[in-house]
Length: 259
Ligand SMILES: O=C(O)CCC(=O)C(=O)O
Image 1 (cartoon, protein in one colour):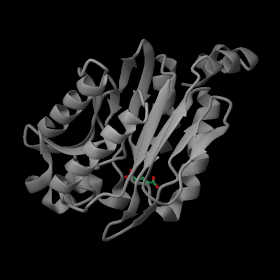
Image 2: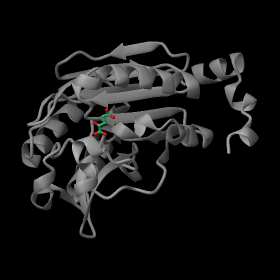
Image 3: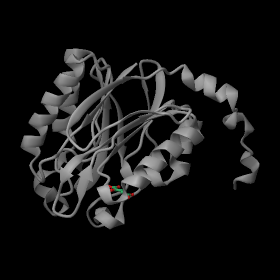
């Protein structure tokens, strides 16, 4: 399964520029042969939180319509990173996912809001899991800070997720945490992790990419540099079964001890 990570810079508070860049990048990834295209977090506005009322995507309509159009045109799935949305008058950090038929198969609001970047002052937290099926394979998506909650990823892999997507705007000053946590989540859950971070900077932070694709044994299949790039990796789903047979972590769990 060919998965494309689209690592990009984001124009602060300028959805128009970001929509046109993202459309171009998705087209480019599709023409390179990707079957699943993955974007970073809050790519429509970046963290311009004080202006969300003007710039957030109302009911996610612009995002959904772009993804549906491109998914149908190229028969690709899009794991749409996330966008800032305004839904029923409240603001969210929302991931949309489309399948190859151009149907929306997931809508997820970031569950753990990141106080260090003021999300809790401006956004509402989501309360639902994010499991979806693409090409007959169960997958899951979390967003950035959600990565620091191993139980949140575990609940998704216990429900069958074989690939966990992690779009982010993870600042360079904590990039070591990002890399170590991503690798740990892949090893402990014996699943693929596909993580896409942004590059560039905003008024408060700078971002150095390091997007990653990690195999269920923990091997880093690809790590991005510090600039915009599209990378396609062929993810071999059958590796999961091999790893889970070699070390049967899921059947060795002692659920009764974990309360
Ligand atoms: O947990 C971190 O260090 C970064 C999290 C973050 O930047 C976010 O959730 O937007």
